[in-house]
Length: 289
Image 1 (cartoon, rainbow, N blue to C red):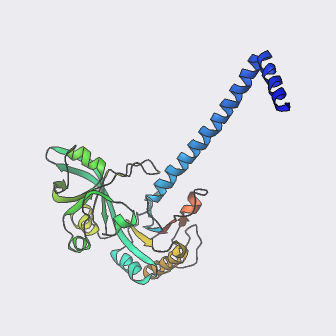
Image 2 (image 1 turned 135 degrees about the horizontal axis):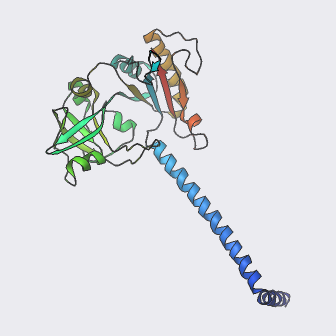
């Protein structure tokens, strides 16, 4: 009886104050909807950021050569051009916990097939690169370690490059000309979309780094070295071992700090993306000539 009486009194109060009741209900509805929407947007943004970070690869260390300064003009990371193929081989051979290494050469140039052409980024990498980046192929096959050793004229291309050159046609097995050198397309990459910097990751051609050096970019130095560690708990130790190894190989004094006084600048993904989770770690080691 008490519950029934209470309910009747409440209903009478609502009928007597219809406008107040409607406004109160509307406020509650809007407030709850706003909270749900904000939580949904926050979770979606977090998931998108985590997906973009994960697309860079798990437990990856990036090693850049440093910058040079001439007449007050600094070239930026990679400008010194001091990293060598032998450095990557030494890391692969001497640093415990390393499961994959990719020497990297980067350039931009015009590519063409038939009467179509497109200006895109050319990445020279080892056969480990797609595994490091966790980048699967939508069709075809990756180039092999033998292709790297022989500097074969093969490549895989991104979805954007493929659509600009071949439209809806299948590019696998087709010939693409890069600096008038014919390369056979062995595979097409699954789309990754925009990077955290807003760069289209699918606008790319990836080939053996030896082919990029010999046939496209020229030179004998690397832009950077990608290193993957098998166990994320070993990243800090592996980073220090890589730093020590490169200091020894390049005669750099170990008397600086993390700001780069010793020729290295070290940043990790946890410091760059605090609060996004620490399941992935990316370290940058920069060597200054």
